[in-house]
Length: 503
Image (spheres, one colour):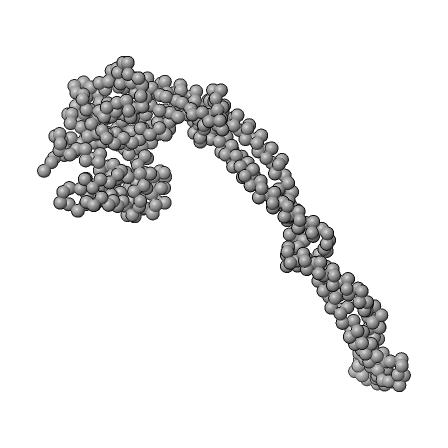
């Protein structure tokens, strides 16, 4: 607990102004002293390594210095502003992002923290404990599932025309392939056959010449062929093979050659007989190849690729044709989740309403001891009608990741005054006391580690000032508290005193 004291006009509020700059506030060149080129504010804030602020700072390139985050803000006399976070230059907006989690400022002109509706709802939820946390966790899971189903449903319905066009294209391609009925490897086989048929005469002539060379020509009985010559050589060796085993081995090898020659000659004769030189068959082959080429030109490099495309396209077409069925399933799932979400949202509303009554009573009791005996605090828990929302209390209302409730803290400062939002229903001094009462009640549930109160004791004295000091000290048991004050009754409770003097 630190008290900042000093005479009126000494400049105590500069603490609030400086923190406002450090936490992303608007840079006003009027803050720069006349004759100076710039104003500089530097701060050192301790943050846990696992805190969201630390993670966000690291994402911005900042480095922690022994568990602390060094922040600086410079404002030039011309109005230009620069911000540095952990040794790295950052946009001012980054500082504003960190502000909510680092410091809650309650001042005459600068209000942060619990004045934001989202923070009020979050704080109320933490105050309620498991009564809200349990249904909120169930709601969050259902909300995620509903969002996923809605996104998929929107994608299918909004892309219906594109998907129909894709299905038509796939059907056309599959019908074209089915009409040709290609076989795997057929293109390679036909290419070989076309080559053979196109050179049938040359192939037949070569085969006949080779056969004559091996087995002789019936039209030339006197001609010499390889088979006759080899047989003669084998007979010559067989006559003397018994005299030398080496020569006998050579005779056997020549015999094997003779067998190979006869086999080759027979195969050549069969090849010539089987060779088809029919020009009609060649024409049919070329026509079939042209049909296959038409497919490979559109659907793949070869028939194997074309068949793979057809298989994948058939699976995709099945998926596209199932869209209507899927739309029905997703619509039913979305409607069921909306109904479930509506029930959970109602449970959240009921739990928050019960916690809000306890909270309001506790804060009102605190205000009675802070020189505001007639003030009354309450919560306005409301929903916004939305025909596309979930049903809560018999109405279709807008909803979000934390439920369908808009939570706002209201203050009636005196009897007969209508409850109004705390930012509008209290003067500066009253507002600081209201926020002090709220923070005391929320002590330990609001994660902000530092609170700054400016003129929290405005317009009070005597016993009320002592009670303000006592409550600030109580809040300081769970957080760092900095108070700008001119009352000794408040400052007396502080652990540290800072005196501001004007020179």
